Amino acid sequence: MAETWRPALAANEAWRTLTKREDAASGVIAPRSVADGAVVELREVTRESVRAICRLAVAPSQASFVAPNAISFAEALFEPKAWYRAVCADGNPVGFVMLSIDTEKPEYFLWRFMIDAAHQGRGFGRAAIGLTVAHARTLPNASELLVSWVPADGGPEPFYRDLGFVPTGEMDGIEVVARLTL
Ligand SMILES: CC(C)(COP(=O)(O)OP(=O)(O)OC[C@H]1O[C@@H](n2cnc3c(N)ncnc32)[C@H](O)[C@@H]1OP(=O)(O)O)[C@@H](O)C(=O)NCCC(=O)NCCS
Image (tube, rainbow, N blue to C red; front, side, top):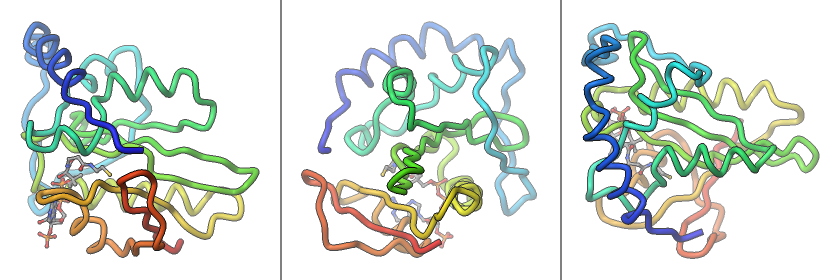
């Protein structure tokens, strides 16, 4: 569904600024890149990590591509199909991934995915998709992982195509639906 998250992002940005000192207090540091040996993991979100994950944000120019993580948590609270993890590099939260897992259909959908603007371009996105795909492959009768993206300059289409996602020919609102064969 085509959604623009700018108002929520602005509210999140204000809260992020107010709470930024929590990152320093908890020892959050800039991790190494994957090329420099960073260990990328998908970790369960905990009471201790949730605020740091809500502080992660994409660049303003990317605001219409993905919801703020706080919105994703709110939606997940009311969606039993939601499965979500923090993307961590060297133990530090750098991104967020959320799947919609429907084992009855079955249908497995990459619902939300983001890497914080300050941590993009270091290989974390590619590594996190690799880990997400590995998880999807463990799900019952998993044959494909679906995603949809906003077709726009600077959008994630080249990123997903490079990872092997291919448009199905369907649209979800203004978003292009694509699949990766598992
Ligand atoms: C898309 C996104 C997750 C990529 O994360 P990342 O950590 O920067 O990606 P990586 O560093 O692992 O890059 C992997 C490759 O994709 C390329 N790439 C990443 N983002 C790209 C973009 N927007 N356009 C073109 N290529 C891109 C990188 O150059 C790299 O290529 P290389 O391996 O040949 O060097 C990140 O840019 C993001 O969070 N974007 C905003 C939110 C968004 O669009 N989410 C998807 C919603 S469907």
